[in-house]
Image (cartoon, rainbow, N blue to C red):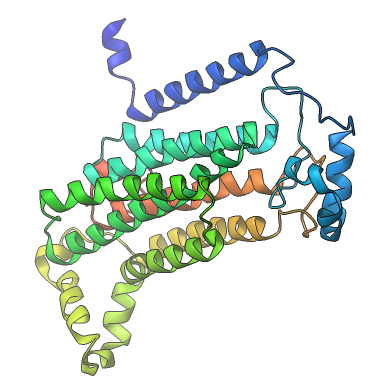
Length: 336
C-alpha cells in the first residue's frame, strides 16, 4: 500500500493537500459558534443596507457610523452573525492556494518556490480579510498582492537570464529575491495598518507592466529577432537583441520547443484570464457595473480565481520557455 501511494503523481498529492485544507476550513466554519459576529448596534438589516449603499456611492457619506460596516471597494452583502462575513469572497481564495500547491509540489528551484509560497500566503491573508472584514487584515491582503507579483517578476527575469545565457542567478541573489518580496509585504502591511495609505491599484498596475516586459520578450523573441532586426541599430536596445540572439544558436536551438501554436496558446490563456480578472476587479466595487450584493457569484470572488489562473499560466509559460521540467505543470509543446 505504501509503495502504491509513493507512486502517485505530484499533482495528485497537491490536490489531496488542497482538499484536506478545504475540508478543515469547512469544518471550522461549520463548528464556529453562531455568535462570533454580532448584529450592528442599530439593528439594521445589513444585507439591505449593503444593497442601498452599493446602489449609490453618494449614500456612503450619509451613513455616518454605519460606513465602517461596508467596505466601499467590495460589494458582497456581509453575513454578520457567522464566522465568515463574505462567503464567496472568502472561499474563492482557495484558487490561490491550489495554484501555490501545484507549484510547490512540482518542486521547482528557489525562485519558483518563492512564487508558490506567496500564492499560499495570499490565500490566507485575503481569505482572513474577507472572512473578518477587519481593516488591519485588509492591509496585509493588499500587501501580499505586491509580494506575489514581485516574486513572479523575479522568476521571470531569471527565466530570461537562463533562456538567453544558460546561467541562473547567483545563489546569493536568489536568496535575496526570495526574501525581499516577503519582507516588503510585511513592511507595507504594517504601514497600511497604521494609517499610511498607498494607491494599491496604481502600484499593482506598475508591477503588472514590469512583469509584461520579460514575459512579452520571451513570448515574442523569435518574431522580434526575425522581423524587427532594424532595432539592432538602436543603441539602447541593440545589446538586449544581441543577448537574445542566443536562441538562434545550435546549443539552445536544439532544445527550443516554443512553436507559433504553443506561443499563441499561452498568449490566449494568459491574456484572457488576466484581462477578465482585471475587468472584474475594476467593476466589483459598490455602485460599479458588476455590483450585485446578494448574487451567489461575486465579481470580486471571480477576480480571485481568474487572477490566480493568469499568474499560474504565466509561471508555467516561463518554466516551459526555459525547458525546465521541474517548473512545468502542463506541457503544451514537444519535449525538449
